Image 1 (cartoon, rainbow, N blue to C red):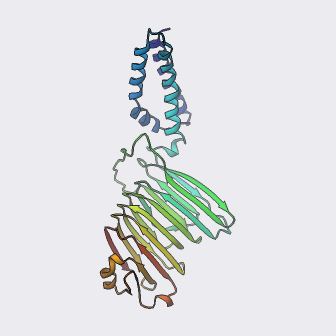
Image 2: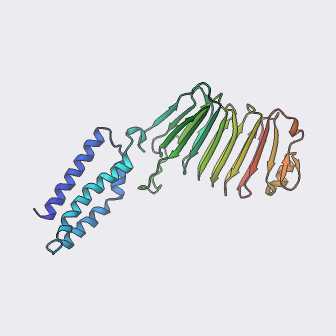
Image 3: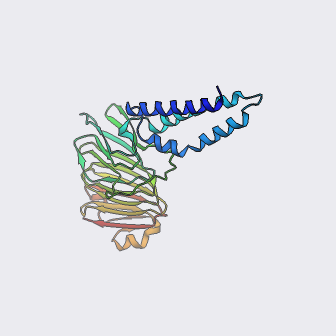
Length: 299
């Protein structure tokens, strides 16, 4: 058997296996994009085969066929595992049921360029929807006593290099709802994301935003007595809306003139509303001095 005959036979076997496993639901359609991106490896393998054919180390020519088989399957397992729900081309959702007795929800969302919308709270501990043509989330959950820890991390698309992002009529990528009763400690990370965060009906205790070059709209209610917000984001645009009945304290010397125009009183670094210490709900905000724009208003 010549190396060329073995190579073509191996390619047919590989494609047949991938089609079979895809139809069985083991892989999703992400494998075809990944294989297309890595198709130059086939040319490299054929080139090595031709170089070593009819030489003393002709065994290398035969080994390139094994490389094609196991390399193709390896790429498919890495990029397309998880079934149709995790495919780039499909819509999907996730639900974590509420468990009585929980006192704290610690959530972390790593967007990596994906857009996020939070518009309301709900009965479930966490409910999330993911649009098609977006990276799906790798979700991990851990329950320790009366604390739930949940992480949603944008699925790695190392084969795509982040180049695949399709514009459709619906601008939203991820939509998330948190429980309406469980106090929330939320961390958001990413870059170049649009975030519409209406947390006015969610008992938010702490929010850490680590997002560069992002557009952030944040609305907070008065369900918790003390709320702490940390904004760390170079060139991000941050808009905050809060109830008129809350006390506001802001740290950020770069925004002194703007904060004074809002009626906040303070020194070079910390500014607060009149009667802050006596308010039923107090909101404390730490601002990155590198923000592109800042807006604070009341409702």
